[in-house]
Image (cartoon, rainbow, N blue to C red; front, side):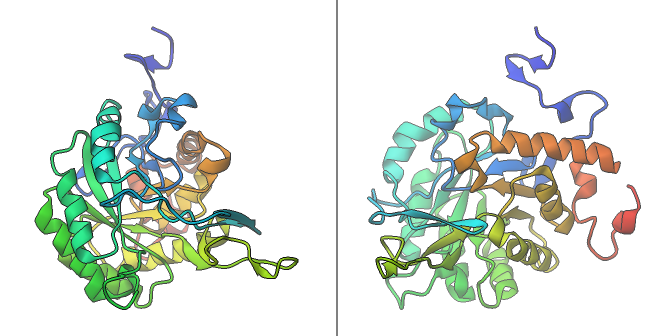
Length: 331
């Protein structure tokens, strides 16, 4: 057996004797590392498997999955902006039945936690998709995308209204025994109230932040660049906003927070962990660097070693008031 390998699986540096531990407890889940891809940037993993061993991820989050197949938004679907990326893919996916039949058996073979991102246009749709994932192979939990409009009501995004957000979580909770993550956006009004509402409704964790709505205009054509007009802004441009959201919410809820938004380095990941997140997701960086999650993981391990942290667990929340590790003190 070659050095650095174990049973056919490459062993990350932080799992080797004498190295800081990257293992972390996130609610009911024990992850080998706190780094995972964000929904929508990794599909269902098959394409990325050509680039690296997916078993080296802490977990895998699928693209958004709905009750019925969806073709998505008209092109153009993506546009680069200074420091970020606008997208209006329109949540294209094959539908939950196809995902259960074709994608999940393959993902189950990876042996890592798999979170299926779920969305719907009504509270009932979220519940039905959650029910169809019950008992599916390899599913560790469901990430509820609450940044979708409620077409059955007034078009309000579920995650912008504490009552609607709680209703989605409560309905999904009744239809499945799988743990639930509630994915919110940093620009939601009364974000802390929404976070507390989904926690009370039964969420096992909260993911922050989803993309933020933005717009780009083609000056020559005098119309929006994206085919659907507005889109979701992601990438480094939203990192300060996502980090602020994690900082605020982590201090108001008891369930773990998963940080996402503009993470492209180990130092970026460390900022979210220091702010109180227990895990992180890498999104836009995957689109330009398919194995970005591995680089972020390796850089995080090196940062732990450099800063004198024995583990990721020791770093979590260390920048928050009252932490013994705050202000340059080492754990």
